[in-house]
Length: 95
Image (cartoon, rainbow, N blue to C red):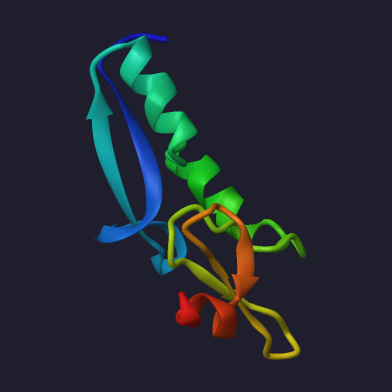
């Protein structure tokens, strides 16, 4: 791979195939490229479009910041607490 190169993510100011919007950034070297890939950027617009078209996983949303919450299909809400433990929203609000 030659550098600099461009990486892509769907959702942004540019209009692409099938009306999808995307954004892109330039990466200067392998280190920046690897970091951007870890952060969800993709090496081509076609790959970004394929990723969105892939069937949605039934996996639960990952909560990674204190206060982030998820809601189950049954309506129960859970929040990542200060201790790093996912708690029921009602319990979190008492802290």
